[in-house]
Image (tube, rainbow, N blue to C red; front, top):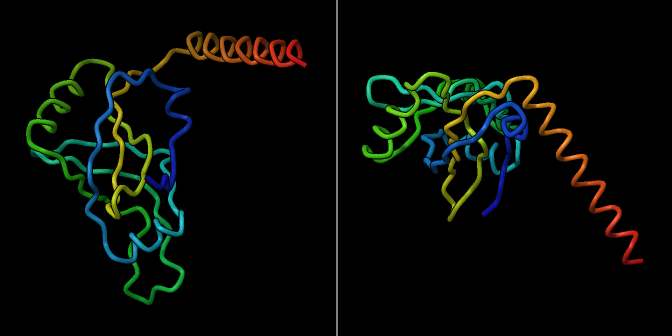
Amino acid sequence: MKIVCQNRKAYHDYHIEDTVEAGIALLGTEVKSLREGKASLKESYVMIKEGEAFLLNCHINPYTHGNRMNHDPLRTRKLLLHRKELNSLAGKATEKGFTLIPLKIYFKDSFAKVEIGLAKGKRLFEKRETIKAREARREIERAMKDRKS
């Protein structure tokens, strides 16, 4: 499994409740650009409209060796999910405070996949607590490392 890009900010800004793997309907130049690692998930999100899931604001750079028929970098891309998964996500996403965000794009057996997270936003004080816990864990690891030496 080759990870193309990750949304690291998502774990800082949201509580991730559930994750689902979905395929992406891509154009040929988009696949080539993804294989080069030219993609970004910042500011992107998933919307369910008329029984279908779509990935919005995902930036995939135009392919470097493409011609004038190259793709639009911010175009809306359809996500490929089973009906049961789609209905489940749609039901959970309509609850107050929940949203669907892409966590990472990767290749699995030569197919481009996106991992979607059902997320609930963190408040400012929760973000501060997360940072404090991370720093405390790092301090403990440093102390244990120094102690072993």
